[in-house]
Image (cartoon, rainbow, N blue to C red; front, side, top):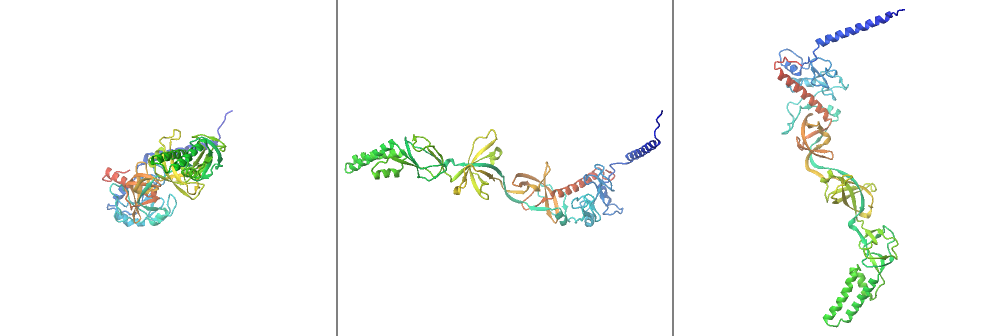
Length: 499
């Protein structure tokens, strides 16, 4: 039994083969006859305007929006990316007389300045309505400063500027500050911390400080101490005073020896931190007291107190009570090593706390630690912060902002106004009367949204701060066309060479 193919399938396969053969023939013919580089340069177009043959001034030439080096005399597709070519007008800088007379009759797209049409219509790229192109100024509107690189001038209609949301700003001088932000926590001011102890042995019989955090004033009693040494020294002082009084009528030498005994007993009590008022009261009474009060040497709050203090035997050097002053607190913060050049002892910072919204405090760097942390690679700073009303409390976290001045009276521009290509930095300068031009600048320090300009601009110049990349793109497109025209003239002075 033989299997015969169906007639319908043979006819379909034959038709497919015929179509493929026809397409292959057309493709071969196109590859043989088509010259992909058969492009008319703008230079030849411009030279054609000067010959004796009549030619329309507004006759368009065609280019690729993505590859401005492609120049065609007729509409078609880009041989590189395949996009539809769009018309462009003759370069206004090559034939000023023709351009000035016809530029007002041309229409362009606000978003795609490369699109130029002889009649009003829609942009072939984005579909926006075309707007009329304004005439170029008769002469240069502004000259670039010495050493600055200025690109081709671009003129933009005021209505187009509004559609582009174009904004400008004046170059001015100002101080460039560096913002350093960190966090820290409050602690006691160690310069205002005192430890209450005794220089004699004794027993605590009464305590006036009952809890931690209790505020005390300078000179207020903290506790009473009974000490046999104090009682003995008091008795010696009273005996010396009585002896000196009895010898008031004796010879001067005798009175001096009696007064020396009084002074020795008095000085011994002073060395034990007995105050002058207590000594004078003892002499005035003429009788010893069993216990003496130990007073606070400074104002503050009790931050430490020995447990079971009442009735305890104390010895010289024992830490009985700790008092800390709260008029100022210390704020411990950490900064990175690369931030240290801008912070030194005496530098000020703004301190804010979430516990006190809307209020700011000023801290001053008290000292900088001499070592770097091995784990965090940071350096610790200590700031002294005033505490009016004692509203700041130990342990609170705070945000600290340093704003040291890096450069004073520098020519600055906003950072967003600079177009950075990696090899050069460009700003767009407003020349006036709707004209703009890119200008290369040399940058310096940067901080707080502004950057220093070392060369290329002066204070008082006006620059574009938004939509400047659109102007720079249009200027680069014109510059590319001008360079291709110049290269074409250099390669073929007679005008026979074609791209």
